[in-house]
Length: 591
Image (cartoon, rainbow, N blue to C red):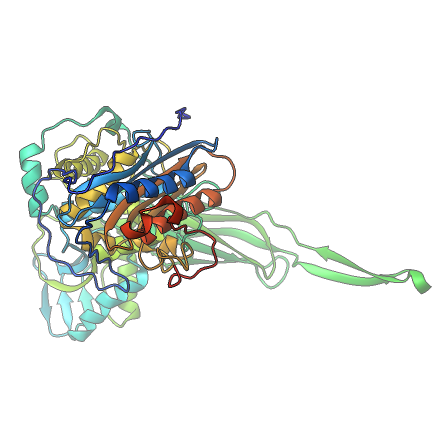
């Protein structure tokens, strides 16, 4: 539904010299000490300014207003704050800060920060091979069953299972006399702080918006017409598993159909990864190969060469059937494909736990560990058992990959991970995730009544937030002690992620850390930047309901961040000498 709002500027009075900054009370929350060792960490150094701050800030406000001011298109909403040396904050600029807007991928700020709080900053996803009760190791053989116990690492690839197989080989194990069993029992990894908070506040009711269910089906990869951040790196397709703790190759199986050498020959079908539970029924045949015929027609000066192309017959249909608990998934191939051609199809893996057990057995055998039993799925009666191999992925590393590349599948996987925590009382899994996200906002003393969390990625057009809430969250991240850890996960302007092509050659390059968001008719940018005086600023800007491409509006966002990055109180004492940062041709040093 279109949001029809008149544009207006909410002027926040400049703080006079000597006047205390606006303080915001926060709940006390401690995080493990973290040192950002990335190439460009943020290091605010501001110690205060004794000059006329009001004149400088008013000139800065005027410059930002000139960039973002009403030009008759859609809705623009923005808010910018500065942090004082004691981490209190005061408003610098606001434009429609209460407008209800689509967050797009800025939603990932809520998802990632609440995941850090809920799971703990030291949490790591583990994929383990455990001995089943009664199993034992004797010489080079495991006698008994082996449990495969993942914890929902969405980056896990079938090739990563080689690491588990190699760990067994390094222990001298070359045989397993038993089955490979995917254990459906999950973990409850709630952090001590989140556990304590939920114990005290776990009975509060969900808002009316939180009863909306998210789509647990397949996720399409991002594109420039309907999905997020067309300036991002490759954002691969993925499918959400019925069992969130199980993920392999983004839960996608690739089917390649290749025509034979000549007309009438059978087609070949290759499935990767080669999953024993994925069965192929092949009724495909090869039609005549594509060909080009060249002949000469006409005489004398009318003589010419004519090319005729035969593309062969293409009537190929490839379908996938099966349910999330079916032991087999059927790939059916019918129709014709021209000889010596091939087509590639991708399907969601329906029974991911069964597929993971099957691929684990295949990888073990490929790496020299024979398995006499079969892959299967069960809910273990006990979680005890010796761990004989495991792979770990740091939560912070995963969130860094997710936020920098704006990876929708990883964000939805984090949302689903929160939904598995049974210690959080809720009537549905998705409500657990939303409850944890809202609990995190309560811990931060951030008013979340403007937020509607439908998913974790921001793809849903039913998500809602406003500029006040986004910037208050960024302020809380700083004040709660999560700043260095969290900014490590954000894209760095002119360097990496979705900001790698933006703000190059300006004071914001290698300085501004942010999260982009783009949907049809929506572009947004939120994050932090350090001013020329070393003062930390947090910002959120979004343009909504516009027509045409987003690049002109992204450039406006960049100009604002560049102005903040170049801001010095001494330079902004006079409007006549106020610096400008745009397409001036000056490099960062000259500015």
